[in-house]
Length: 456
Ligand SMILES: Nc1nc2c(ncn2[C@@H]2O[C@H](COP(=O)(O)OP(=O)(O)OP(=O)(O)O)[C@@H](O)[C@H]2O)c(=O)[nH]1
Ligand SMILES: [Mg+2]
Image 1 (cartoon, protein in one colour):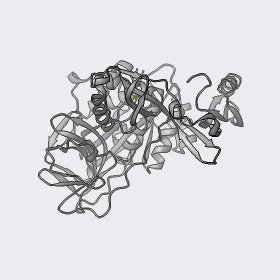
Image 2 (tube, helix red, strand yellow; image 1 turned 90 degrees about the vertical axis):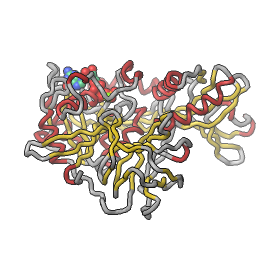
Image 3 (cartoon, protein in one colour; image 1 turned 180 degrees about the vertical axis):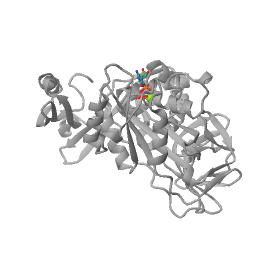
Image 4 (cartoon, helix red, strand yellow; image 1 turned 30 degrees about the vertical axis):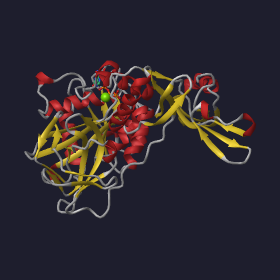
């Protein structure tokens, strides 16, 4: 479709503010999913997501919509997770879009991940559409929350949309706002192909499936493709869009989002963040790609049965395709034999990875106690980083051991200052600054240890 009629946007918010439910309503109003096939949070398709009631994976889906003025539009939407441990999913999704719907719960207001995700979206230069959700609830404070959004974002409170993702109030107005406010994609359809891989998964028959946003040019079946970073070449087995299941198509054009079934069985050949171009007319420069992620929590993962080591290795490789924030390297321990040292974004991320490995790859695993990365200054003056107790140098050779500290800003109603400060001190925090934002709200800046003493 012509880029003038394409809009690419994602939905971002703090955890549980109603992103996936809002996505449900958009899918319903656009007729992408019929009322009969609709379930609550339909894009949370993984068993784990449904059991825990949280989104873990970002999901992309294409919707067709005819605007009030009668024009046909193609809307590519990405629903993102709100939990801080899955923030890498959000940051990658943002690079596939020109706009973001920022959802704020009308009973909760602006929270930590609202701000964190907002800053990511501003960094990625996206147009924001702030929305107050859950206005159907008796305890909703839409006017107050809209004023709060005006305060952090600068969008006048009257331009902040008000919706109920549960009952469907305000959804049509929101769709029109997406078309009006989100800019069209600005790729060059005539230029050599450049498509950004923002996610992927492994399919036993079709090999690595790359989720792509086509920036310039077009992908067609029977064109030979090249992965610019890895240098691998392949002819795609299938192309298509997410509807929300994979639906084959003949062509993906500049501005569009979809998938390429690469047929590649070697996982290293197709990496998230790489740029796809054609062999015949390669693009001179790849797209910027992604910043590598910095893991915060480390643990060893070992198979219960030593014989399952190779199966675990294979499983980690495949899972990493679907979760680019997982890092791992081989490790051995006297007690547990051969396994892997894995890095995670947080304890919840660690729990999810372990569960996914056990369920999706049918493995029995043991995980060691999680720890953080320490910096050891040696007597020689050299600094080494240690993320496993087994790698700690001899005591006599170390001058100092440093642990990770965080700079934290806490926003709280003034009446909770006492309780919050108790918590801070409990976690070895040091207060650096306290500022009244208004007579009722306070910002406390602290430096704090990343882990509580005794928690590892
Ligand atoms: N009353 C009411 N409840 C809502 C509304 N929107 C969402 N909810 C409820 O809020 C809870 C969280 O909704 P989700 O859509 O899963 O929230 P989310 O932002 O996708 O959550 P994560 O993806 O885990 O960050 C669910 O119990 C929804 O039913 C709304 O407009 N009104
Ligand atoms: Mg969700």
